Figure (cartoon, protein in one colour):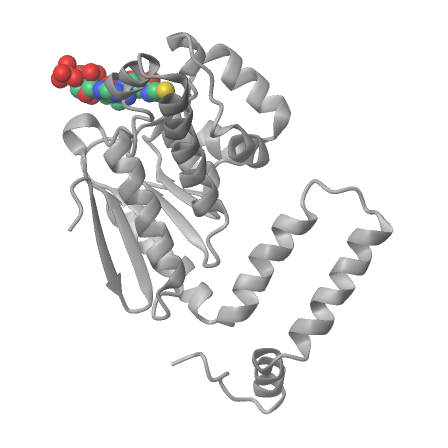
Length: 261
Ligand code: COA
């Protein structure tokens, strides 16, 4: 039983909901530990093929809980470091989850909230959602989230929004690549997510896992002979797999592959 999140599995979709609405779903040690564990559980649960991260209340996530951050600053270096590692590990688990992870953003996302959005594979928000990397305004830095945010919006926009701490709109987040889609309201969010999930569930579960791993292995790498060889090795392995044979065979035989119910 969790204290700060809710979890549910519905028709192959694992839903993890931040449920600390009175604190705008800000991350404290409990929320970080629970969210991290839930992502791991969804990653290993065989009935789950896609994961959604959503939240209750008016904000998606107000980033780090500043009471907790301040408390941590007074701890020993070792305790402080252990805690910082737990936060970095949370974002890594989201980004490297072997299943696609979708962010459902119904309100403001600040600091670590932007990091959580960036770590997800796909992000959909309402038009009125707002974003900000406010850390420097608070005398701190967006450290744990930086690999994910820079991967999502690039170094150029990271320089602007990490250095100014300005708020930016959903339209701007969409323009710079943090969001994939914007919708009018929460029912639009459910509709958009429904379409994305339907598309994902038509795809081979192993192919999805291999594809996420491929993107992570190739992104940001120069096109060296090693990278090219790695891509050849990967398709060699995947097309010879049972799922690869079934997927290509079902297309040629004009039938559904065996993973589509
Ligand atoms: N950590 C701890 N408490 C937070 C918080 C955070 N990140 N964000 C909001 N809260 C608390 C507020 O202190 C306030 O507490 P109080 O009721 O005891 O005074 C309560 O949540 C409500 O916040 P409030 O600012 O009054 O609500 P709002 O609807 O006007 O604005 C936010 C909501 C999220 C836009 C605003 O609170 C905000 O900007 N928070 C800071 C977000 C941030 O910079 N995060 C990055 C941290 S690295």
